[in-house]
Amino acid sequence: MTTVSQAGATRPRLTRDDVAAAREVSDLLGIPLSTVLEYARRGVIPGHKLGRRWIFLRDEIEAAVRGAPGLAQAPTEFAPRGRSTVARKRPKRYPETVPSPAFGEQRTLFG
Image (cartoon, rainbow, N blue to C red; front, side, top):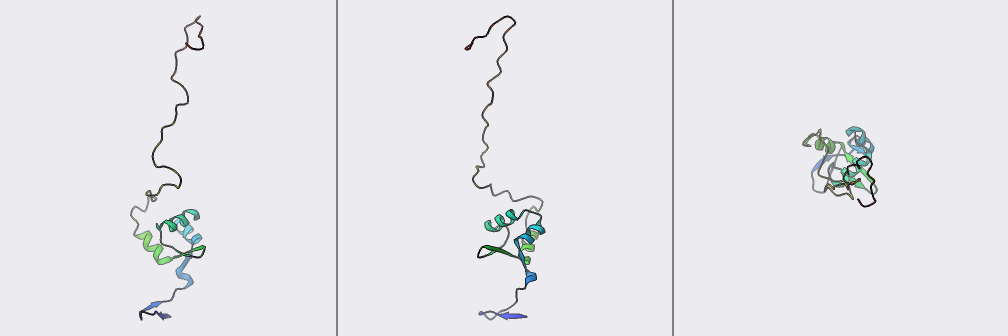
């Protein structure tokens, strides 16, 4: 069945087979549900938010996956929220090693 839009063009009707829930996309791509929702929110994968729910069109997901550069790599352009991408130096835990006193010498607190 086709429907006529206001512009006059005809297009096929959307059926349940054309739409996937976030859980189905998660299973299809083999990534956690939270990652699917985050990628949809950021626009990494195409999705449509209806109220509080995300839906995904199978054709759009398939086209996005087929056209994605470097399928074996996860997207790296996004850093986790709340964290800096700059590497930080760890503070030294222990002071520089001090040679132990020779036999018979007594060490004082300051030297």
